[in-house]
Length: 65
Image (tube, rainbow, N blue to C red):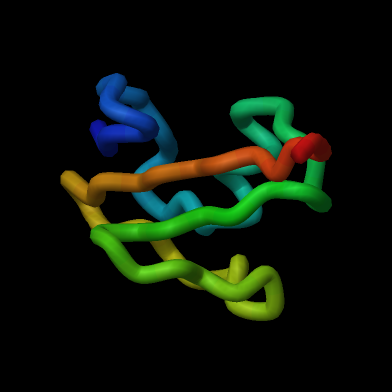
């Protein structure tokens, strides 16, 4: 199925979870925030399945001032 990740169409398995997407994209499990259709998903809920056509935004925390 296709979802949108940070504005780009991305092919994922039909049953992909937030955690599975993080692994697929080879992202670290810490220092990032994930929102699905505008709602931030706490890391404790990353087992949530991502719906078909969802818009996912992933941001990385950076240090600085």
